[in-house]
Amino acid sequence: PAAPPAALQLVIQPGDGGPMEDWMNLERLRVEGVPMVCLNGALDKVTSGYYSNFLNPELGRCSDRFFTRFEQVFYCKPLGAGRGWLYRVYPEPWQCLRETKRGLELVETYAERPSPAACLERLKRP
Image 1 (cartoon, rainbow, N blue to C red):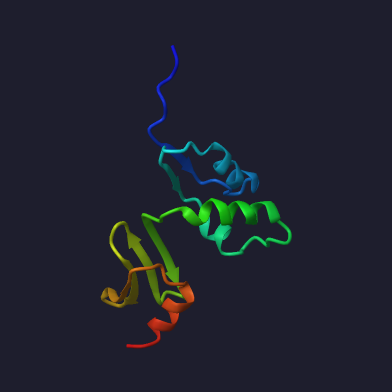
Image 2: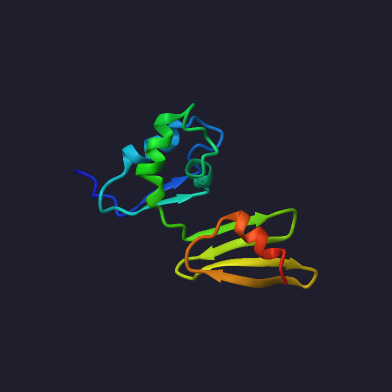
């Protein structure tokens, strides 16, 4: 008997210490109409230019075509040396949080994802 069609594609840590082809293979494996959930995918590296498009043109094209369409549903990135965090839980807005001795303090929320540099600048103000 044939297996039922997949209701979800779950991908764990593509490209983590492995070949860059891991990321490109996600596009090849993608099934239209089936949600793809990527955990710990380091997609910031793929979409931010961390990997040079000059040295990795195929990965750059894949990123532009495929990974820029991903919606981050949980995101938590440290900012600076213990200054704060860029945080999001879908469908809530993006949050810039300041780390204080008493805990985390909400500094600002954003409808669109801000850059880490913009959050660091915001953390410099009261």
